[in-house]
Amino acid sequence: MLLSTIGGGASSTTPSGGPTQTTNYPETGAGGFNDIVTQLGDLKKVITDFVGGPMPQNLKDVYTNAEKAIVSMNTTALTLQKSMGGVAFNTREFTGRLMDAYKSTIEFGGTFDDVADGVEGLADSMGRMTYPSQEVLVSMVEVSKATGIATKEIGKMVGELTRLGGSQTESLVKMSDLGKEARKAGLSSNKYLTEITKNMKTISGFGFKSGVDGMAKMVKQAMLLRTNIEAIGAKKVQDSALDPEGAIELAANFQMLGGAVGKLADPFQLMYMAQTDMEGLQNELVNSTKAAMTFNKETGNFDISTQDLYRLREQAKLTGANLEDLVQTGREAAKLDFIKEKFDLSGLDENQQGLISSLGTIGKGGELTVDIPGLGAPIVAKDPESLKAALETPAAVEALKEYQANQLLDDRKLAVAQLSVAEQQKIAVDKIKDAVILNLDPKEREKFYTNIENTNAALNEKATNVANTMAPLTKQGVIATSDTLFTESAGFDPSLDRTTKQKIKDRYENVKIEDALFSLNNSTPTIMSEGQIYKGIVGDEVAVGTNLTEAFNKSGKLNEILSTLGTMPNTGGNTSVNGKIDININLTGSISGDKNADIEKMFSDPKVQKQIMDTVLYKLDSYKRQQGVLS
Image (cartoon, rainbow, N blue to C red; front, side):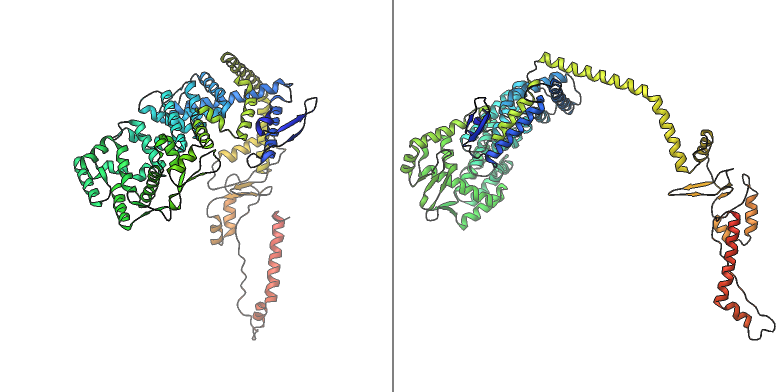
């Protein structure tokens, strides 16, 4: 069934029902039939993962997946409530409302996140916590899928429309109608609604006696001219013409421009339009712009003279528009008028006129080419008679009828009609994945929640009891590990008893040493500083103080200093000095009878000096070994 729905091909089956071959599948998307096979493989995997096999043999797996889904949705709802008002209450009921809306939208591609995003957008726009009805939630997703606008943005649009009056439901009906209006005229409903919403705040000011409808007409006109209302410049003109003085000055400037400025040269008309009729003001600006264009029959283009180009430049200054934008707007407006007038579209309704005009292109000699969706070959007409004849053919009538019928579909049907193969597959997957929770009624859903909470509470109690039971043993292990790490890092003998280790630890951690000389009986003194550890030998005394090296180097009375240090408290055994000792041997003078200074020459000989120095160093090393400094 899935294959025939997706690809439209034929398949044969064995008597047992197993497929044997599949043929005649058209290419679909970028991957064609291979893409469909891949998607079916994904679908099979989802089914297998969800139920644990072709049949729900392992119900625990089914429960686990359902639990994950409902917990995830509840978390999303809770987060949404907090973001809206900072306080969450009745979250289960709120989640249920979102889930019911999701269930109603899944057929045309809606997701739970789509529903939640719609609420978030509505709350952002209204600036407060909001709980839209299920009808509103479903409608927001319908409009979103029909127009391609994100659900969060749809929610914001609804919030902006409600500022002008009416309920959320009425606002969504209005948005749906506006979307149809755009599609009938061959315009993008996405851009149409977005542009209207962008200018929504303007509607509350001057110039919009018809409210949203007036703004919609301005946006529609601008889009048919392939521009926007800001580029035409009505807003800038309105700001300058709301008072008599401004209107008189602006009208005088338009009079000086010359050309077909119409009501723009009348200060009273200008001020009236600025105050109550922005739509009319935009029409006058468009008329002034298109009047600068002349159709060139030889090229099929709409040309503008140098004089008119200067005039449009001045008009751009008055309206705050861009000159290039004005020129393009004038060409499009002149083209639409040319088609309507030359080819006499009066027999068509307004939407058909707009469709033919927007789809049509003008070629050399004024030839019109119209490519109607669904017709196949485009219509080519040289005059009204040939266009009328082409539009009255059965194929053209059917194409126009089908096009308009499709544009008049309600949002749900349009969303379904626009589903791609991949989207259809995703819907099938979502239906299977969320089948359990979407079929729970409110009472069953509440029981499911309760069971999850009770299960979590029981597991939490069991885990707490286990932790409390293990805590004393774990504590002893942590303490023992701590002692071992400290002992090893400090370089102490691991065989020391706990009391001795604690005394050592207290001495390291709690004693503040300034200047001192101390030793540890039957142990090696250790000095730890950042990045290094000095380990002494048994019987060493360690001097700690400031500028000791400097004191030793400056004083020649080394023995006197050492014996003074040895008389300080807490000392015993040998005393060692950490510093630099320079040994300099200077042999000078003369010996009687050594007239030729042979002795002096002998001591100046580098060989003799080296022998003397080696002897001194050997004696010094012997002394160090005796003292235990060297092994």
